[in-house]
Image: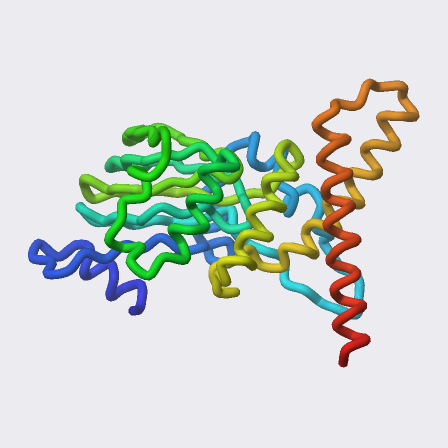
Length: 253
């Protein structure tokens, strides 16, 4: 469907179906200059802070653009329980309308149940919130900005026509869980088009920046937060694992 066709549908007084536009990333459009993610997102985002302006050869990889989405949802739209790709955190700003979020904490038990639910043949017949110990409800209204932390399982109901700007971002404050979600996506065979683009490359660039920051902090005698140390160690272990997989694949070829 062309965007103008969706706009015509959205403005129609007699809709016969419920359509939900949730994946319109507009970084490469004229609208890019009109919307800016919150300051905290720009400060923490790995792509913003680590991706080089001129990536080195031989792979001219495209910079992942995932932090500027326009979501146009009609009344009664519903997105079932999911975890945002790569364990990214999410920002939402409701320009007008309303969203109701159903949120589940990413504990080990809940993530295990989520994997089982995702693999179930009758997934659409089960409300995942009934299978966990706690499912929280949060209503976000016009003018409010909402953040979803790393790995939180969530569903979204739109009670009235709503326009949202939002985006996804990786950061250094929950690296272990981000990587866990990324590996989970492999296990449940998430299609490539629904995964974070060039995820492992982003991690390599972020790791280089983290190592530089750790050296600077050590040289200055600054106390390094334990979360930063444990996260960096976890990231390095994943990088070694991925590098081994690439070497094995090349050897097999």
